Length: 350
Ligand code: PMP
Image (tube, rainbow, N blue to C red):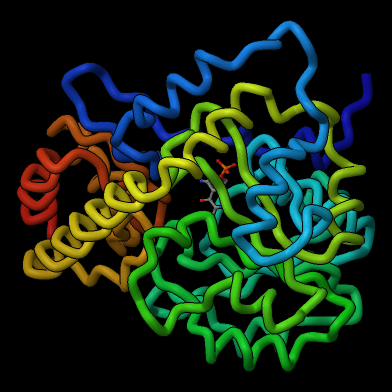
């Protein structure tokens, strides 16, 4: 059998390591809280699982449209926001086309460019782990079809500011799709951060905002994410997707989570407090932790990344190393914080 050589060369998606019963799993930016009882009950009480789900997740789309002050055709739901990233790449970019993003960022970006048959073009983050939006605008060519802006940036943590994004938008041709990947938006506390909802309200049809129920809403295992933006772009994305991949259970859980928003927001606020406390304590140990606005912190360990991650693992803390670059630690259980600081201090840069 012939496999496309660029697909054969793709690395397998690297998942955060699973943790044993006595370890803290801080490697996949998951929510440490269980789904709320009301969410579990809604899934249990749902009936009709012998039937296929509604292909367009119409009820969930309607609810999300209401929240964004828009109409249903401006919302697309899929099995995780990562699915939508792949769909948008396929819908916009083919052979010879370029997909531009800052690096380091979410590991799926290089793969989705390759799967679409297009070319990934990367611009390095600055020394503080931030997108360099000026350099990104400079890197746009007449082959650029899609730009991904990740804010807060996974894995380094900082946000793009509203002012920075507005200036960037003004420099990018209106026929280039800009995907604002806001997987961690709910954790943001920086008042200067860009807000996708506000960008859309200002009327920018080349911007699609991506959000997910995996992080703040704690439904990573059910796979449901969404995009808000121009109906024509989202219809094209939908056409590339595998039909019927949002399960009925996922749609019920997402709807019930929106009903329980206040309680979930309290948990998110609690995680943001833990994050700020952890980042501050890590800085005291000598680590130059960049602005952390998601549910994770970044240790710029450089060449020591693997060694530093091993020290954490030996202490029962499963974290995510990026070889040659750094270590990402997700915000999890409150009891893990002290252990993280202790290990970080023992391997702090001198
Ligand atoms: N975007 C970013 C920046 C992420 O970090 C992730 C998850 N790691 C995703 C998208 C995908 O999330 P999901 O598919 O679970 O919605």
